[in-house]
Image 1 (cartoon, rainbow, N blue to C red):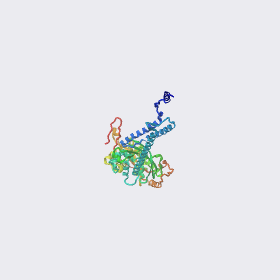
Image 2: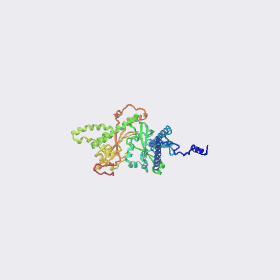
Image 3: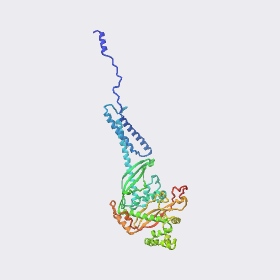
Length: 504
């Protein structure tokens, strides 16, 4: 074989090779499920970081439980993305620019969600613990028999004020509290739980069962605690709302969250779940009976002096004389027919009735002695208009509830009323608040109350006696006095078309 033939054969058998222009690995699309998981977990982290910064700068807790929905969704999407990728036989991937979207989303959601859930649990525990401690302290002021009852009541009232309003207030200064917080102080004194505790100081047992619900507010938290109070009157389920105000300054931050007990319009006791003892049922009947006796007196007093002096003999003077004056009342129609109109009520105008209304009927709170000017003003009101039921002039008055108190020598019911001030125009809307004191000193009633109180077993069923049957008993009520501070209150809005008047 010649040389040319050899070269030609070598050239044909070994042609030159060029490198390929294609990728060594084919393109695989990113799973949309993995992208969605990454987007949701990323959104959760961004919101959490921004909210944390806002909460830190405003000194507020980060309470957004609905935020936990995002990590839950991210966990579900991550799990679904991993299954989708594993079942795609290499046609889907979770990698994007070298980042494993599935694993990153999964761990962000798990760690971030669990961390924030633990934070919420700590906040919830703190709120429940601090709120329960506040209610325990508040109820201790109401139920303890140690110390001055008035001071203890004032301490409990101060806990219903927002922390900023308590500065400079002392529970020993009752007069200051009454003057600065006239309506809230009155509302708190006559609310159902306070009345119940006042009658049973030293014998109340309170069990706080937990938080019914709580919610976050821009200024702090609102909570509602469930509790049960047990005393000789029965078992009383309670619902106690409280507010926790978060600190807004560095100085307040040292003290932490501050609490205030809310005074609900409908009271703290859940009425339809109360279990009365026989003692409690009798007290409930006494409150209704004494309240009706007092309201009948108030309603009748507006009919003029002749009825007012008749009321003295029928409801104020010694009980033994009431039948005599009832006969006089029945005979008044005959006298009027025989002698004339003035002769009918004339026997009721006695020296005792005039002296009583002039000197003894009106007292200041806690049986204080009114000034001569206050006595003169009262006589003008009494003989001119009589007394009015609560709400007749002071439409939004909080003083509307009867207060029953039990003492060793008497049962007392304080019935609210209004003393209408004389005047014209807008001044005719002014009135003072008062309390008609109705008392029973019946020995048989007091002995029965003593026995029932000793025999009371809270939680056990009371007797079958109905409230109507108890109310049929004669409790021998008498009106003893009218309490009022004679402070003229002017409604905030005058009559249409008239200017408002200021309280002197």
